[in-house]
Image (cartoon, rainbow, N blue to C red; front, top):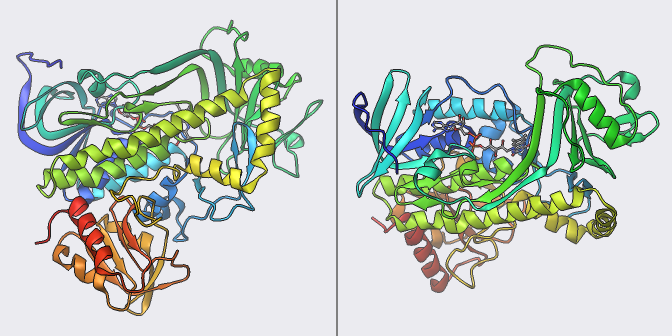
Length: 531
Ligand SMILES: Cc1cc2nc3c(=O)[nH]c(=O)nc-3n(C[C@H](O)[C@H](O)[C@H](O)COP(=O)(O)OP(=O)(O)OC[C@H]3O[C@@H](n4cnc5c(N)ncnc54)[C@H](O)[C@@H]3O)c2cc1C
């Protein structure tokens, strides 16, 4: 690991529990999670102000329910209504009809990344996390007790000690490189994607779909990739914001125009993709306006998520195509998985072994994203064979069972965590259903009980034996007894980890000694011994 030992480096004598390199969405979310769990994080962000560029246009998948667990869904939507699954989406530019799918797992929150980051920064600050803008991690070393970070700050270089350091510093992560963690995968250089804010004349809006009615071509539906034999086009008319027009082309579309990209360049690309002109106009209203050109792309996964006292989250650990918008679903759930575990270790409530479950649980989720984004990239490519594959794939997607499989894959709910018992309850290792519990004369949703990010033991049985079993850990576990109203998903008692995953569940009206024994094991495994 490199260390900057320049003589002018000073040492910040204060030390902290966890240093987070990178104040993007994942670094900020981790700061919230650590603060909620009682650890002291410091976020180092090299930018003095949030980047102008907006990457994600929305969040897709189980992360929307995770945000509900933390009260952030309400903050971002301005409504206390719980998130509802979407009736349809798109996979590899093929429509995914979810209207007939039972127990549809796919949620979407159409909020731009900049707003998500602002909300997370506000929340992290409210919770007492320290965010140092204009501070760049430049080097690090570690020993048995902790990590020493070399930092370039506005007042010059300095060093800061922490028990752990988390690299949330994006796809080019310096933290990952300094630890010698490899980033194997593939780089493609045969695609060119162009995106811009545009204004579309009213006469070109298809009244039936809200998409584009392109003279001489036909309808390009809104909010989905539309494939032709020559490339891809997408039209996203977000309410209250300028519409985004995107094209993607392969191979032969050599870029001859000088940088930067222009609207005229996008115009020519649209003509190549559709075979006709689309007479769009420059965007109206206040900028900054999007004008983005991306060539090629990387699909890579860190060969380890941890090197001693340094861990990786988000894009620092994995990069992949943005198709289908899986990035924040994956990254933010990394942070929610790691936050409570790392806090328990720094607070002396758990051994370091707990940290091993971060990688064993989250790497499979990243592998699934790598798989489905590559599958979607194959489905959108040009060529007669791909067209044939799409016909067949489209037929398969009309089966609600297959549509559900794809929806669960995109939601990230297809990965079941190992809760240590082969005959565990079907809900164990899954994200908890949003049960409604009648307690103290009122009704409360599980997601509302999860706001404090504490473990939950919910007991709906008559004898409250599960609650009694957990009572020795009341200092760590929030125990709730009551009645489940609405669907109970067949459970009578369940133990939910702070990341929303079910660690143990029972369907028995009165769990027997054997079941209570497995509850005891789960409590000890995840939250330590009884006091
Ligand atoms: C064009 C595009 C569209 C996308 N669309 C979607 C979408 O619709 N939905 C979705 O979920 N995801 C989408 N993504 C993916 C999503 O944007 C990323 O997954 C997300 O930004 C990753 O967050 P992060 O915090 O891990 O990294 P980043 O957002 O890259 O943040 C890393 C932060 O670390 C800082 N930093 C870097 N090095 C240092 C250092 N040495 N010291 C201090 N600070 C440092 C950087 O300044 C930055 O602020 C898209 C991505 C792209 C490129």
